[in-house]
Amino acid sequence: MTARILVVDDVPANVLLLQSRLNAEYFDVVTAENGPQALQACAESAIDVVLLDIMMPVMDGYEVCRRLKSDPETAHIPVVMVTALDQQSDRVRGLEAGADDFLTKPVDTLQLLTRVKSLVRLKNLSDELRLRAATSRMIAMNTLLDGPEKATHERKILLIDERDSSAANICALLEGWATIKHQPDPQAGFFEAVETLPELVMVGTGFKDYDPLRIVAQLRSLERTRFTPLLLVANPEETDMVMRGLELGVSDYVTRPVEPQELKARIATQIKRKQFHEGLRASLTETLQMAITDPLTGLHNRRYLENHLQALFDRALKRKSTLSVMMTDLDHFKQVNDVHGHDGGDVVLREFAQRLRRNVRGMDLACRYGGEEFIIVMPDTDAGAAQQVAERLRMAIETTSFDLGAGKPSINITVSIGVSSLNSPDDTVSSLLKAADRALYAAKEGGRNKVIATAA
Image 1 (cartoon, rainbow, N blue to C red):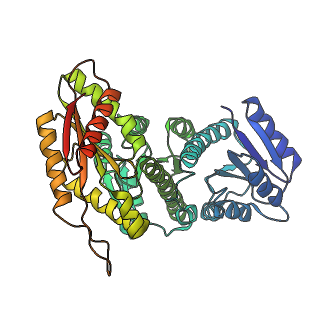
Image 2: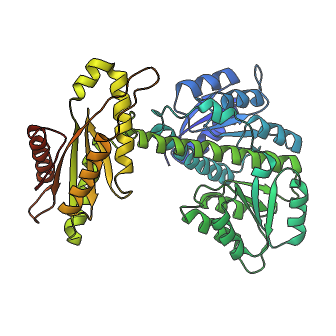
C-alpha cells in the first residue's frame, strides 16, 4: 500500500525505529523533529497519516493536532498519537484535540501497520470525495469542520452486544448524551442497522456462538451501510480480533472496562467524520447536478440531453416502442431582449420553462437547448399524441401574457414547435433531431405560432 507517512518525534532513535518498520512495508516516510516542522510538512506535502509524539519541545502533540484539525486544508489527515503516556485522561485529551487513535510505546509492529493501513484507506476515500467536490460552490469546509455537534437526540447509536452487563454499562454511560438502542441478537442487530441507519453502530465481542466480525463484514458489503461508523467494544486480550476488525472496516474501537469520556470522544469523532464525508458526497451530487442543469430555467441542459437522449432512443428501439421529440423556439424573442432588456428576456424564459413543465409528463425530458430554443423528448409517445402535447403547449403560451414584474407591462409571446417521431429502425438520434429542426423551420416560415410535425 503506497502512502506517505509523517513521523514526528524529537528523539531520533524513535523516528528511525518507526521509519524502518514503515519502509519495510513500502510506505514513503517523511520525518519532523518538532511541531512547527510537522505543520510545515503537512502544508507542503501530500501527507496521508501523521504519527505524532505528544511530549515535544516548542509545541506539544496536542497543540499540533489541534492546529491540523482546525485547518480545512489539513483537517482530513488522520493523526495517530504515539506516546509513553498511558493515562485515560491523556487519551481523552488527545481525542478532544482531534486525534484519530493512539499507539503506546513501545509500539507493537502489527498494531502499527494495521492501524496505519486502515487510516490510509479512510484517507483515500476522503481524498477522492474532496477531489470530486473541489469545484462545488455548495461546499463550505469550515462549516463542516467547525459546525455544531449533533444534538443528543440526533446521536442515534445501535449497540449490538449479547452480554447484558456490558450493554447495560454502556447504555448507562451514554444516557442523556445519546439515544442508544440495544440489540442482543447479532442477526437482528444487522437487519436493524440496515433498516434504521443509525449514526454509529457499536459491536461488542463475546458472543457465544457468533463471530462479531461477521456483522462488520456484512455491514461493509452493503451500499446503505458502507460508510456507517463501526465501533468495536473488545476485551484487552482480544488484540488479534481488533486488528482483524480494522482490516475489515471497523472505524475505531474501545476496550473494556470502557472509560466514559474516551467512549464519548471516540463516538463524537466518528460521527463528525461521517458528517464531513456526507457533506462531501452531497457536494459531489450538487456539483454533478449543476453540470447538467441550466441555471436560468432549472431545466436540464444540452449536455444532459446529448447524453440521455441516446439512452432513451436505444431503449425505444429495443422495446419497439414509440419516441417523439418537440423542438420549440420563442417567436421574435430578440425583440423582447431589445425592448425589455436581457432581464426581461430572462423573466420570459423562466416563465416559459414553468409552463413547459406544467404541460409535459414527469417521464418526459425537457431541456433548454440554447438561447430561446427548448427540446422535449417524449418516450412511449407517437406522432399524434406528441402533436396534441405540442398544441396544448402552444396555446398555453399564446393565451396567457407574460408578466415582467412590478411597474412593467405584460407582453404577449408565441411559440413555434417542430415535432418528429421515431419512424424506422434505421432512424438515428441525429436524424430525429434534424427532422424536428426542419419541422420547426417550417413552422417559422409558415407564419410562426404553429405546430408542424414530420417523421424522422
